[in-house]
Image (tube, rainbow, N blue to C red; front, top):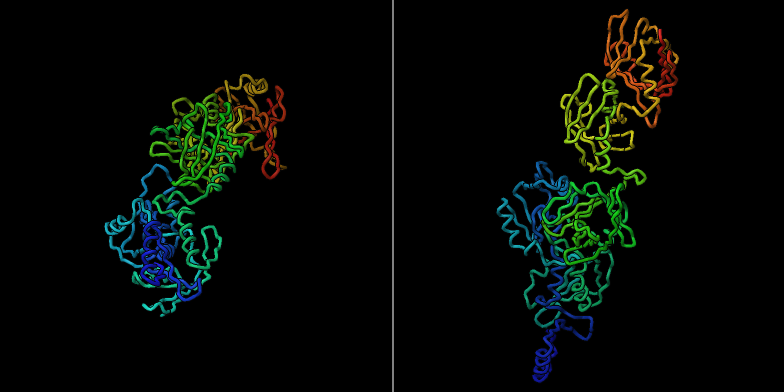
Length: 588
């Protein structure tokens, strides 16, 4: 209390004023210099200084679940079966990444004890087991809250002066860190007086520096900073400390694809997965499948006591009308949370080609509409020629068959998101590993589908065949001419090398059910697969597939039809290096 006592009446007057105003002035002036003021160790200003210099324990809440202490580095944890040594704050990001790999799993973190924790006053305690750690965590405020001030910091060094009972300066201390500041004040008695050598500098959470000239300005700055930022004192490690402007920037950057929708405790994900939300700066948002009419709504963001909020409002569309807290925001993902029964997860899709977006429902319908012929399959960059020309048939109910016209294999299929959140065709055929993968769809045309697994160097291209191409006059004509055999190889040339003699005496009979038989002097030698098909990008194709190890395997290719008459069929194939192979069949 400010001591300005000249006589008893003056004292009574001060007490009377204090009684009416309920105010207490806590700075005592030493000497005639108005800036030379002391503060009591029990004053509110001293309390603010201690809170600002306290050890922040909130950064590792993902590990210890408490903001009033932090675990000292290094220590080791096991996260969902993965052992990690935590040497720095950056290593805590690895824990969150493992937790975030799946949204519907149970995250388990085990700490290897003993560990040492540092409390808010920088005192240290050795913890021997989980029960002991949880006991200290329970002593923190509810929900892991603590009362330190993290939105502003002291810039050191700072010089402090101590005073004796006669108000004469008795000592000087140079403070170099928060630890020294907090420990200094903890060691004072309640009635001890100290003063600060001004000016000092404070730095705010946004990097702004504030120069402080006296005790009153210091108290005001620290008090004001208490609620100026999110101190992240809760146990929700997923909130990721972002601002409203950062959320706005991500919303406007790219379309957002729906990954999960739970409303009123009902999981509606299957109904909306792959759909897109496109946000505009004018406050409008469009929900679209690219094949149906767009649904227009409005959006806005705001700050609340719980963090950044996103409001979506669509007329007659309740599943996406929500006022939700954004509890996670990273480079490409937004998680919205209203309560346990209402949450939405969105994935940023800057990779989408807006000129050719792929809609899941249209993709499924196209797959089931007709048969799909394998034009190419590559595993780890190597082409699997034995599957050339085989046909898929994707049936309702999730069954799929793969056939060469004689032999048929059966398995299952579905569509969904792979681990990279890419719309994929998921095929499982137990005895055909060459196609049993999750195939991300890269290009979808009415007559052609292209799939690619980047990290595995797997590719697959399928061509549509409906009703055996009965509506394609060219295909029907070429097929009819080929069926009217037998045929002989009159020319087979790889680049400039003529290998025609390798096929001397062989008769080729192109038959029904896409089977081709090779015979010599009416003695069957081999069978294979053939078919004629139109490729929307490469024109008319003549497929030949001999799954053999002999010279006939050289003819396995999806040949381009160059010309055809009733007595001659000329085919060609251009390799990646630009060389051209030529195959000519003629009637004997």
